[in-house]
Length: 134
Image 1 (cartoon, rainbow, N blue to C red):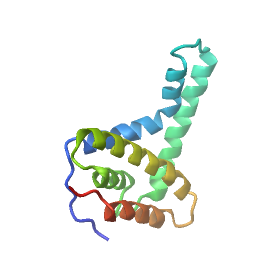
Image 2: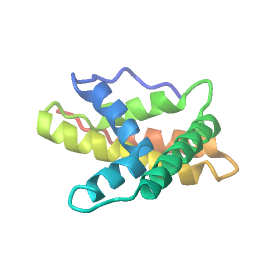
Image 3: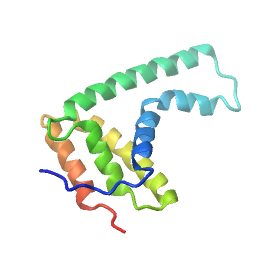
Image 4: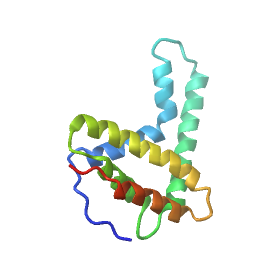
């Protein structure tokens, strides 16, 4: 199924890529927040770094598992981001970041299914059909 062109607002693409970066670096970001008021050992930083690298490789495998020639994984994330974008800066920031991060987490579970590309395509199509329209 082809998607009619979505109107992407100015922040849609940067927010989508920011959400992807936040999910991939979440162990290091969590450690950074935890270290604000406390002393954190080098071993904990090392563990967070290794967990971040493992998460990046896991998400690369999820991308390969959920992608098709018609709908690559990152294009699906952009479609979800554009579907959640309403043109208001505050709401765009909140909805696009949370929505794209949620889709990445859900796609990790979808990648375990036998028909992962089909399930991912249906998930993106659901967001596309229920997109926000001004």
